[in-house]
Image (cartoon, rainbow, N blue to C red; front, side):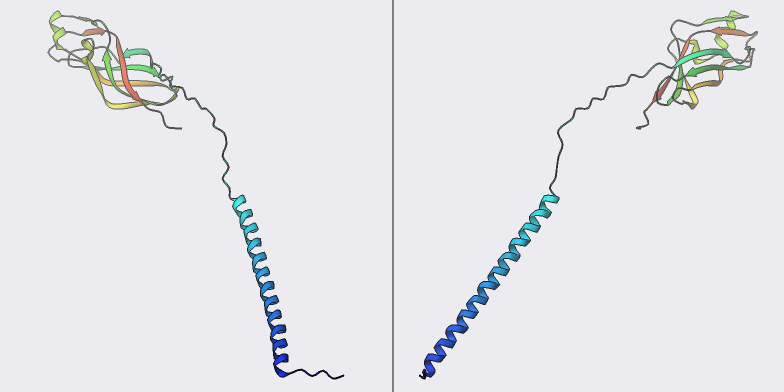
Length: 187
C-alpha cells in the first residue's frame, strides 16, 4: 500500500508540527521566565528580610540636678604688718569640693564692719581697701582656677594699703568671702 498525500496536506502537517514545537518552546520559555521571576522575588524577599529594621522597647533614664557646694576658706592671714606708705597681701587657702573647676574672680567683704585700729584715729581715713566696707567687692587682677577637689593657696597682692601720710600703723580684722564661677566640663 502506498501512501500518497498531496503537497498541501504535507505542508499543513509540517506547519502543524512546527507550530506545535514553537508553541511548546514558547511555553517552556514562559515557564523559565516565570521561575526566574519567582526566584528573584524569593531572593529579593530574603534580602528585604535581612535589611528589616528592628527596634527595642522604651527605657526610662533619670538625670538628677547637681548642687554646687560652697568653697571652703581657711588660714586667712596678711603678709605682714601695715605701716604708713605700705601695703600687705591677703593670703588664704581655698578648697573646692565640687567635681568641676571654679574660677575665683573677686573677694567680697563679709557681714558686719571690720575692726580697724590705728595709732592715730585720723589714720583710719588713710586706710585703702575694698574690704573695709561690708558687701564691697575687690576684683582679682588675675582670676584663679581651683580644680575639682583641690586645695589651693591664694594670694591677693596689695589687698590693704595705708597712705604715706599716716602717722602710724593700722590693723584691720574683718570677714570676707570669695566669689567665682564654675562650669562642668561636659564629661
